[in-house]
Length: 253
Ligand code: PGA
Image 1 (cartoon, rainbow, N blue to C red):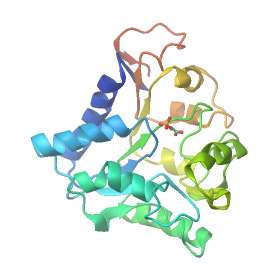
Image 2: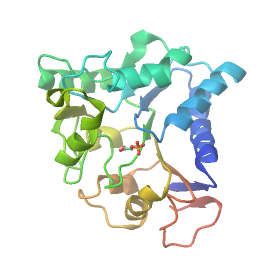
Image 3: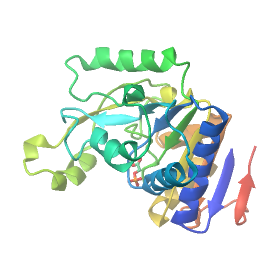
Image 4: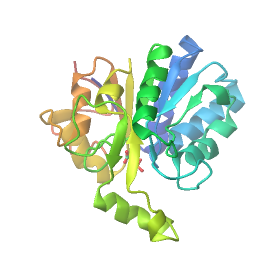
């Protein structure tokens, strides 16, 4: 595992964007897995800047998003379709026909999940998956206890997540109770992982992920099994690591 610790959120984001950009330059038709959440926003802003200022070309990439709420139409401002288009896709030259985001409005969710996996297989899998991490060690909507071999499926959201989300909805009935998420097995099939984490709120989860035992109770710990995982942190997220480390690059094989 390659761990890079940067001074702050901006340089963490730049470093992560650099990894994504290198992948796209090396293989212009790369298949990239995108994540939502606040942490990757800096990385997305940096990709937008690279597109505008250096002509970084997204026209041949294919994208797959990690997850989406069930029951929200694509135009809903709390949904992940909206998030991705507003924060990244509409600012770059991605081909909309090559954008895959789970369909939370699908009539038959189980069928949709199988279809989503098949679409990934059809383009020979993900070259690179971007990941955030929850304070409890979740990746995508794979909360503690998720099977480490899981595939794309519907998950019930934890009552904490439902409660946390309630403030974004006028009608409590509208707050999603389910989500479609790539499984941990799906994520592990990506040829490269780039996990970003920032701030002290993530320090315990990062310590467990990099230095703790692999356990379904901290789903992100599975990245220890990946052959090409690059974890990019700011100093606050790295502040509880116990192994000796220094500014810059720490390589642990
Ligand atoms: P955050 O979410 O980037 O908004 O902290 C990360 C996650 O929960 O996966």
